[in-house]
Image (tube, rainbow, N blue to C red):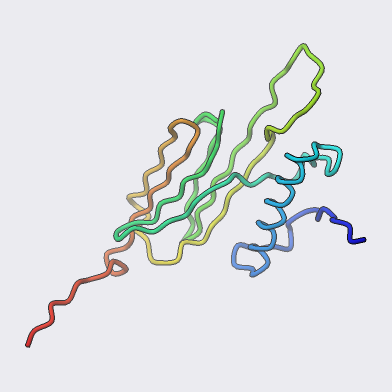
Amino acid sequence: MTMLTRRHGRADITPLSPFREFQDLYDRLDRLISATMGEMVFPRETTTPWVPFADVCETEDSFVVEADLPGVTRDQIDVQLTDRELIITGEVKEEERDARMHRRTRRTGEFEFRTMLPGEINADQVDAKLRDGVLTVTIPKAQAAKPRHIQVST
C-alpha cells in the first residue's frame, strides 16, 4: 500500500524552480485531505505558510490575480512585486474561544502566494483591492508587451 507523506519545509524551492508547481500540487492535496479527514492525518506545522486559492489571468492590457482570503483584513496582507514575481503574504490570527474545538478546517497562521507573471509589466501602476474576502491585484502590462494590431494593406 502506498502511503502519502507530508513534505516539510520549502527552503529548497525557489520561485523559478520547476518544483514550485509540485509544491503547489502537494499543498492542494494536503488541503483536500485535511478538509476530508480532519487534522489527524496531517497535523499543521506552525512554521510552514499555507497557500491561498488564487486565479491568475491575463487580459489584453493587464495581468489579474484574485486570491481567496476570507476573514482577512487589509492590515493583515502584504503585497510585493519584485521584477515579475508577485508575492502576497500575511497572517490570519487564531481567535480565542471559550469553547472546546471539535473540528477545525479554517486556515490560520501565515500564508504566502507567489507567482511569476509571464510578461513585461508596468510596476508603477499596480492596484490591489480587498472586497468580500477576495484580494484582486491588477498589474498593467508594459507598453512594449501589449499586442499591437497591424493593418494589412493590399
